[in-house]
Amino acid sequence: MRTYKSDVVIIGGGLAGICAALELLDAGKSVAILDRDGEENFGGLAKESFGGIFVVGSREQKRNGIRDSPAQAFADWCAFAEFGAGDHWPRRWAEAYTERCHDEVYLWLKANGIGFFPVPHWIERGLHTPGNSVARFHIVWGTGRELAVQLIARLRNHPNAAKLTLHFGHRVESFTTLMGGISGCSGALEEGGEPFEAFGEAIVVAAGGINGSLERVRQNWHADWRTPPQTILNGSHRYADGTLHDAVGRIGGNITHLDRMWDYAAGVRHWQPRKPNHGLSVVPPRSAIWTDWQGQRFAPPLVTGFDTRDLVTRVCATERQYSWQILNRKIALKELAVSGAEFNPSIRDKKRLAFLRDLLFGNRWLVDTLTANCEDVVVADTLPALVAKMNALQGDKAVDLETLAGALTRYDAQIARGPAHFEDEQLKRLALLRQWKGDRVRTCKFQKILDHKALPLIAIREFIISRKSLGGIQTDLHSRVLDSAGNPIPRLYAAGEATGFGGGGSHGLRALEGTFLGCCVLSGRIAGKSIAGRTP
Image 1 (cartoon, rainbow, N blue to C red):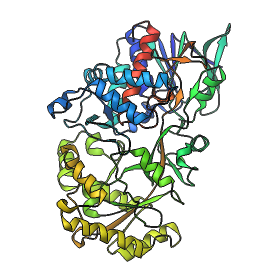
Image 2 (image 1 turned 90 degrees about the horizontal axis):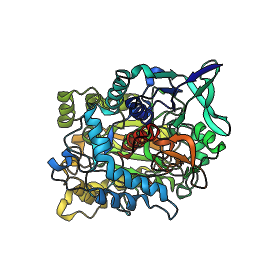
Image 3 (image 1 turned 90 degrees about the vertical axis):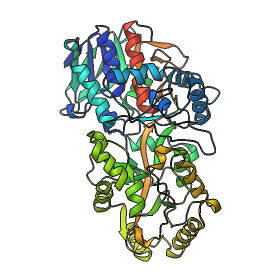
Image 4 (image 1 turned 135 degrees about the horizontal axis):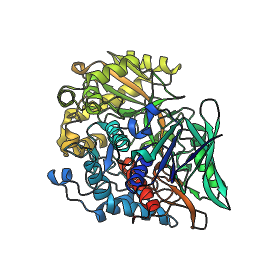
């Protein structure tokens, strides 16, 4: 059996694990990181992400005339989260993040070579439930890949790098005990199954959530969303399967709120899948008409940027639990986007001229890539031809041409009346969005759908896509794992998505976006500082 020994063992090589390791190396501790994935994927899901981080009181906010404060952000967070009476630790973690994210996430990342876009994005504004009252979504220049690459480089070049060992392809399955206390962990290699043990004075669980296992997602499906859809796509990490949640539960750790998830309503299939049911999360074009599986427009209309959870709830309330978005090429060029580093190459590779070109003239590469390769995207020059392709894709005649034509005609007629006479709720929201410059540059100015100058027409079939876990291992503000009685389990810590991003569910029912990466940074740093005996 392979055996590893170090001061601290970190399970998971994602953002939270990396941040914990950096704090421990700063304190002179020896660290072993065990990760199931290959070394080429060191950095986890953060490395694939778009790279947005929730920040309060940033320089970028101030330069754009945004007044913000921890108290205001915490009030917004609590309103959106709808915490329950028993959510003590989730609420404490939310308060800690809003108070500490400026110094311990934003400034710390800047000190580590991370830069941000000059204009924050304003998303999750809230719909029936209040959300972000100001723009707080700060995009990393270079996407999540730059975030991971820079921090990994700091790890490898750390003055105490000799005290760091990295073990890839290692699947941790359980914890080992000695004299009634936790002494380490054990498991097997992903390839070959050779067993191993790792021993340390402390163990940090930073292995992600459960949303990479669609079986777990279905088992923990929230009651608000009825039954799980027949088709759910996977937009999470393939190894985020809850194995470590089970292991923590077996030794008495408290696992909470696993039915709270951050899924998206606009997933499409990846044409080069790297895992089963691999999905891409489309950022739904705001000027598109969003319909149910029959081509019936949702009423009230669905518009992204306000309440992501509501979008999922509304789609799941329909009979077949998938939807369509109808748009044209002009809208697609201006508004169509896919979340993540893979489909934002100009930002990922920090090509300023290419980014400005896409912003001014439309992202032709992305639109052409999706229309040419994605099976869930169909294109036609006329509405009858488009509906025929939609039905052929689904293998039935579910989409009714007359119903869809009526919805599009009425929408276009509203646009023709002019902004002063808008009665359509979607158009009213578009007018609101366009008041913020960060949205105005990426939102069409009331573009008709059936516009012969904007052809071809495009239809996107969209499924629910599993993304992030908002529940998990309960922790206190020192990132110590708690048992069901609320007592810390000696020598066991957890950080990142494994903890529901803090306390077993710091986001409650809804997340304000950008809080996922940010909470990974903060909770990972806190775990490392706590173990090192430094005040977190």
